Image (cartoon, rainbow, N blue to C red; front, top):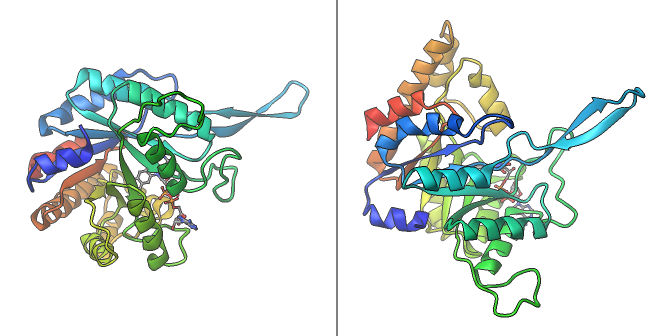
Length: 318
Ligand code: FAD
């Protein structure tokens, strides 16, 4: 079922959902099940699975020269989606990204997802890899999430890259996109960022999932600005429970977000990670309760492979 149908069927009740990341190459699928099993009591109607592009690694050759190789450290998104469907009565939402993929490879991945009966995709651009200063698109790929969205929307209309196909069968993916309450770091200002977000919605995005934020007023302002720009699709807040003391500086630097002063000071005072985790849970509960009262359609947690904090928050909120 589509994410938008789950939201409609909930008739105003806030749903619980989460995002997981594939395990590192070489680990077992059981890692995912161990993470998800304890969270199933909160009935997530859908679970997002992130996509990770290849990175370059440099290996020293016996000749002494450096050999450049590419590797995907967290492969398996499509397989994990199939495994989630098989084990739980839950709709997987694979992320698909522009970075590192030609349009042909993207089309093949979408065909696989369609054959597996997967109804949703979250369409993203992806970030630069470590060796690139800024995002470099694949020479035969999509530049922006909007271009990728056009490709998925085209497939939904039966438009394949090979236009010689006789009677092509259309797919029917429900398309989600990302939104940034604190602005995407590359956008010159929030207004331009919202203009590009509106282009994605006008081109067929049916819902938005936000970047993590720790100050609910940022989300409320973002929703208000979106509505003022005639963006009327559901806006799902993404929440990350802080799990370590170091995340008080790591998260703002990686995700280009602010931590409220009160949260930053509380984390500063923590003696160890256990205390920081408890603060993260308390903050997550406070944030979730307020968002639920406000009437958000879904509370979507970035679990990043750790279930205990999300579980404690969900126990207090759902
Ligand atoms: P876009 O919508 O393409 O926007 C990128 C930038 O370009 C923005 O600054 C925007 O304002 C600007 N822009 C857009 N259109 C134009 C235009 N026509 N001209 C000029 N500028 C333009 N990354 C992964 O690699 N894998 C994942 O699984 C993943 N999951 C994510 C899930 C969520 C909910 C979020 C919020 C992010 C996720 N990311 C993931 C990270 C994401 O790929 C990055 O934030 C990326 O930098 C931007 O992706 P986007 O889809 O928002 O890009």
